[in-house]
Image (cartoon, rainbow, N blue to C red; front, top):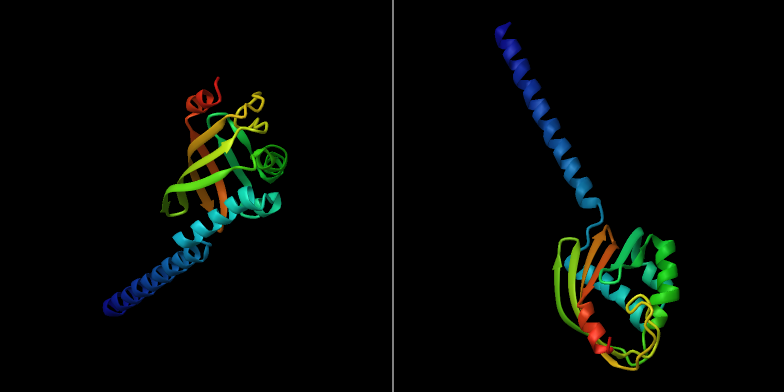
Length: 178
């Protein structure tokens, strides 16, 4: 009887071990099947987002790259929005139409990590339109502006979840004579 019990216990441990291994494999498979973009895919999605903002100026194409509860914050001025309804209004009414026709963009540096990108950009333009998200309450000055900024982008699944944008606001105020 002792030998039978030991063998039964051994089989039970073996069975439990196999069940535990199976559980771990299932858990790992679930984690893998959650959409995780590769670095090149993150960059492609971010570039598509930027194209919607600056090239095609297409609000819906821009929003299509984002999760429903995405948020954007231009940190120096605390402008942007949270959620697609607020972001739609922000992009449509404030951000996209404010960019002057002479806008030039240059990518300085990009670092891609797991689920995130840090992008350093240089934008140059003439302050020829109201830009209340950028220079609240400042009428167009017709001064040239060189804006160097850093954007921290987080992704959730296969969409953008957040953008935090940083720049030297005091330097910008100096460029427009304020």
